[in-house]
Length: 451
Image 1 (cartoon, one colour):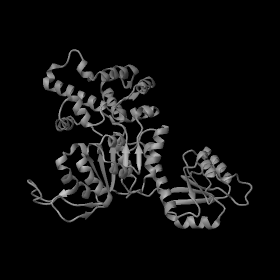
Image 2 (cartoon, one colour):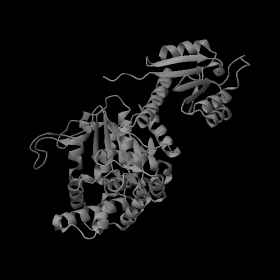
Image 3 (cartoon, helix red, strand yellow):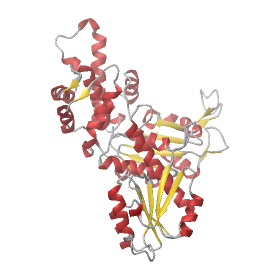
Image 4 (cartoon, one colour):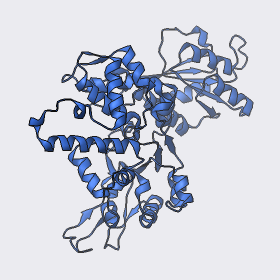
């Protein structure tokens, strides 16, 4: 069993009653240090968070609360600073946020709010530690850009919050990674992940809510639905925009009541599961054209994460590329030159992080040297932009591999290109002029990742 990490809290306040109260409500894995003047602290001490009072009565040696926040923030930019005061004037609160506070708590402090605040700070530090430690066993968000840090802050802020939660972002921006991080920051929480687009409309109710024996032709046994299987954990519904209107009302009813009624049954079962929903489309626009229920949108968008496209976090591209190349070890031990990283950064990335991952996988195989050069990247990006796999342009082709090999290679490349250029699988199927079910079969056959 993993040991609970120890966290350190700095409290800047001269109210002994508040200090004693905080000591009583703090979880056992939090250690508190209280001071009236933060200048007296040992600069080598590491604090994960600081609670700073705005008015240190009668202590003229200490600057005003907002100035203390600015000082602490300057000395330790990673520390999560929380301001606290009974003075709730907008001018004071805005000044605290401007100087580096992430949150403002009203005095008198409420125990539940303090605990919730600390849990969210823990979640943020856990994600930071995953990034710094590296490794491939746990899901983690790679990147330290301003947009990435804001995304992690949002995810951490949703720790302990009930659903539904909405994750929105373009195809390939990492919606499943965000879901896994949300799930990972809860202790031992199971999850069920579902791609809505992969479920035929006539089977949605049975798949989602289950059915009893004899409910319809072919229902030879009772089936537990995905919602019930997620009881006590998280239910992830990806590509919610693909859910037909006729089924949206059934999902809305489940979200509002938590009740599951199997097809063919008169009895309902109460399910306690946090529902996390993802989309790569603008649901508000779909509401306007009558393709998405407005009441369902209102129900799912109260708590939302909006993931930035890769073009808005280009500072992360080098770290992401290095991470994806490390996944290819020990089969391909390649590193990225500065010129190659610059070439990757200059590319438009219409397919976002998913496209970057696929290109890194290919470059690790095709580059002839241990160090990937700019020319390796540029030659592949040119081929990639034309929709061809590098191996297909080799001359002469190795015909001994057979026609089937080359047909499959070309077909899988075209499917990947269509997915990178499309909002969802339906759009890709329309672009390729094939049925959705046929495209899903080929995606499965070629082991192509679909977010």
